[in-house]
Structure formats: structure tokens, C-alpha cells
Image (tube, rainbow, N blue to C red; front, side, top):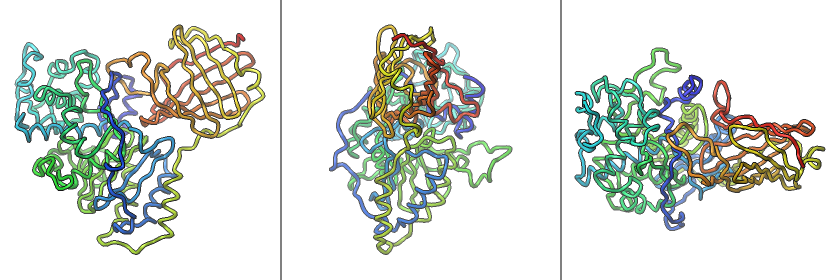
Length: 534
């Protein structure tokens, strides 16, 4: 990992492992659509004591900020009072949660503890006698499940990156040095959450996603989620869960209701309390960028949940994925996004939505409610802007460019320009990868183009032919430059593909949205050169 990438990960706000590394290995999927019968009840903001004008102010602040939101859902008194998706994102689609996955893994541990399958004081090495190093140190022997839950393993360096390079992640974790006494120091540690997932699978015989199916997902009518696995078939735990926004809001509502769903105690309130209350203090910065009491990453860590300001708690994931529970306001907020400033995103919530919630219902505000409804229904990420066409378009449309040798093994490229957009195709020695691109609009499709969608470092490669959902739009930046944006709308990320033409030559470059947020933007994929052949 380069120093620039490490600096960027730190800039995001939770450290390298806190980004919840997105694995390349296969996901496991449950079946079934989100049904109307399983949805949360709906209401108007004012009926639940929320100001529609304040929600509008929040949306305006988001629009004027550098934060790119993909969805949000505000639940008050158990009813959805505002919800929106920025097209091409939508309510029916999953969204990668990154490290917000950890809170679901914690919940699986809670069920296992409730069923007597394990205890938080159990020693981690007791679950994996065949994966232990030759010499088990005193601190390795002392490591408890509770230390994994609170990210106080005692590692001197975070072991996730080296762990995911191995085939046996459990063995790699157990062999990693623990120089500090477990339970004494907080260090963000995605590999610790993976170990929780491995322990749940060890004691139940099921992957976490399958174990949670009858206990959490089915009671809450959450369907269609996926969770990536390690090479040995264990859900990665600390990242890799994809779920719909409403499923995320339901999860938060269950915690707000102390484990009760439709009058039934699904998870004991005692566990909810234990899992969401202060357990360990994060290290305080020597040169804080803001007062510590205004930093939502310094309010204490729980069992894979974070404490927040305003007596709230949350699950969060890289690039702005949030599930925020506000007990004093009897409210839950779910957000999916892509941002490099997660604290700034939270600041907008505290500034606009928190004070919008009053103790009593508010007078009906038909005018503001109509404006809010219109605003929410028209949310969209702007397609690329520029020229609709170029004098070059007719000359190169339908022709093939032979590509110079490149690390991506792409051998040919073609463009077919039509009134409604463009059909862009790359070809390697075995396959063609066509991408339909809208003009002034997002055109949905799928692609198996290698290297897509953008991913953080992980320990495997995607299965050949795996397709990602995407929505694409393009425009001419000038007469010689055609630029496309490929939005992978089940992830936070997108690619910008820039095609520059010079007489009979083309240069194709890629820039993923994660790299764009780096202080020194650079995509690892090579710039491809080619020449028109027919």
C-alpha cells in the first residue's frame, strides 16, 4: 500500500482498516424482493414532530456541500417521515455498507451469546485449536471475544491488510503479534471483526448471513442482501455486507426499540444495552482539528458500534455509510453516500435534522410538505455535461481502434455514437465488454469489464465474468475529448473514463472516485493508447 493511499485512508477519518476493505471473493445472496407488506409505516414530518422546512434545509446543505449522498431515510416514532434516493440509486437496490457491516456481525454475536453458544469472556484461541501458532504468547492466550468486539486486541499494527493476502485468514490473525495486553488499548481493527464472524460460524455451523436469516432478516422483512466471504467461505464480517436503505433503517429501529419488533423480543434488551454503551475510549489526538467533545470519533467505542454526540450511537462505514440511532429523539437515520469527510456529513445531520425534531406534533405545513415531496422525488446525481456531439463522432463511429500492448490486456476499442448516447466497447483476447452510455441521462446496464467496480485492497480476485450493475452517461468535453461516468449504483463508487482523440489515435484513461478524493489522484489502471484501423 502506498504512502499516498495510507494518507488518504487516514483523511477519510477511520484509518485504513476502518474503511472496511471490500473483498474480491464471491458474495452469498439471499432471495426475495422488498415487499410492501414488510415496509416500515409512513407518515408526514409534522405529524411526527419534524419540520419539513428543516429537512429541506438539510437537503439544500447537502447539495451545496462536497458530500455526495446516495440515499437517506429518516424514521421518527417508528414511521418514515422522509426518504430519498439520488438517481441512479434507488430503493430497490443494495448498497455496499463497508464497515457498517460490523454492527451486523456484533448482532450475530449477541444472538449466539443469548443462545448460550459462546460468552464474551471466552478465549479466542479456544475456538481454533488447529490454527494456532507454534508458540502462543501470553497476550494471545488472554485475548477474549470481548476484546474483539471492542477493538482492543492489543496489536501494535493493524493486521487486516496482511491477513487478506493469505488463504487462511484465521491462522494469519492468530499468528500476528500482540505486544499489548488485550482490552487496554483501542485500535481500529477490521480483522478482529472477521474473527467474530469466524467464531460465530465455528459455534453455529453457519455463515453469519445464514445465521442471521431467521433471527434478524426474516423478522424484519429484510431481503436480497449479500455478504462477501473469505477464501474459506466465512463471511468477512468487518465489511462486505450490501443491503437496501430501508433494511438499514429497520436495523436501527430494532436497536432503538431495545430488540423488540412487532411486540416480540427478538434480541434481549440487556444485550442491546451492553452492545451500544461506552466500553473503551479512542486515543485522543495530540493536535486535534476540533474540540474533542465535538468529534464524533472520540465519544467512545462499544461492541462494533460508535458512541456519538447528543447521546446517540451509530454504525458507520467508509465514505459515509451511516445508521444513526437517536434515543432522546426516538429517531433513526440511515444514509448511504460517498464522501471523504465523514465528520462533515455528520455535522450536517446535527445542524439541520437534530433540532428539527420536537417533542410534540407540529401544525400541518402543506406547502412545505409539497415542496419536500417534490424535492425528494427529483433527487439525482447530475450526468456529465458538455457538447452533445463532435465533428469527430461521425468519422470514428463504428470503427475499431487497435490498442497498444497494455497491462490490462485490452486489444481493441470501438465507439458507436447515436442520438441517445454511445456504445463503448473494449475487447481483450477472449471477451468483449460493451457499455451503453446515455447522453444527458443515466443508462442502466451491467459490465464484467476487469477492474470494475472500483475496490479497496483485498485478498482475492473477482470471479471471471462477474457482472456489476452500473448506470452510465457521457458527453463531449471538447471536440476531441469524450468523457463517460460509470456509476456502480450498488457501491458508493464510480469511474470516469476519458477518451482523447488525435487524428487517428485514441488515449483512454480511467479515474475511480476513490482516487479522485486523494490529495494526489492516480488510478492504478494504465492509460491505454490505440490507433484507428477500420
